[in-house]
Image (cartoon, each protein chain N blue to C red):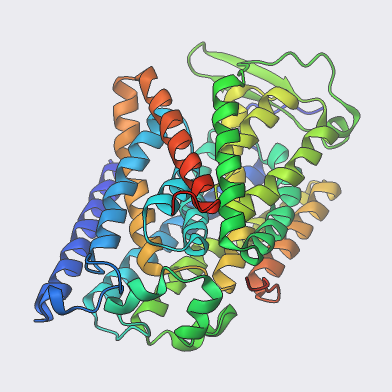
Length: 138
Length: 323
């Protein structure tokens, strides 16, 4: 049974990519929010009307504000509020490349079981991110 | 040095953002009274993100001092006392917990405190189940969610009061599964200068428990450190520091999958999410600074009291007794 005093190669590779991804995502989040607040780009939902929407259940909000769920926000990046989704998606997605980064390292070390688990994790996260899974209304 | 710069830049940007917010409102030339606010609210729209930022800032401090994650405080408190629907609160709660975990993850991994080998099998179960939990949570009526959330928060209070912690649990023999997966390690304990060898046991039971933890994390947007740590530490026998660090890192994976379900179903409002993330992160930085000087034991009881109040509020709200 191998013991490790130092972090393993894959652990360090994961940490390095996560670190730069997290910082980039956070920076994007702050910059896009500043753009939103400065009203340089007109938001899809006027800010003064937000209190009418944020108290609604999400399904009513989507219908009332005429917003399509899933990746439809990509087509609305010209709107100040939807611009923020670049940073949100970046932070929510940064784990996927971290896993992809360690898969070849694991297989190179003949750690097949963990390599397969890492591939499954990528597929699980990709499925969650795909927008295929829809929650029922209430 | 670089860390100081990051903090300075973050503070400056937040200050800038708040200024712009205020400037945007005042420069619009519209008298505040004329801004169409919510039908039954006299509070102008911009006050809520500002209050949210201030509250989450203090929440970040209290969370660090009380030894809990931000998500577990965020959802019941913001859900109970702010005008936002529970759907958006849970979406924001997950992103708050995710951002905190992403920020802490690299350091914990590099120092060898969080263990990737322990996290990977747990994460695949917890993140899959968090997707299911998020879908169930978004499909349930708000009343049901509030009742279940209240019950869960009160259960967490019970865990915080009763669960013991074991610095170095006694693991006489690693079980077969953890042996096959080679889940074992050595970490350097700075306080004693010793290298601590560790192994785990009861791996199948532990992994099975993460099915429930994943579902609850996704359903309530709470993060799951409150459950991860006791399972990793007390049930599976990982040392406390490894359990806490691996749990924090684990949230970056579990909450990722659940967060995507909330994002893709429209339950994320940037006006709530961004002030909350920045507020709680800045609060955590201040909290860590306070923690290095002192560790007031009373703060943990304040956190427990806050959770007790917020959990009761969620349950009473769900039951229609205190709306």
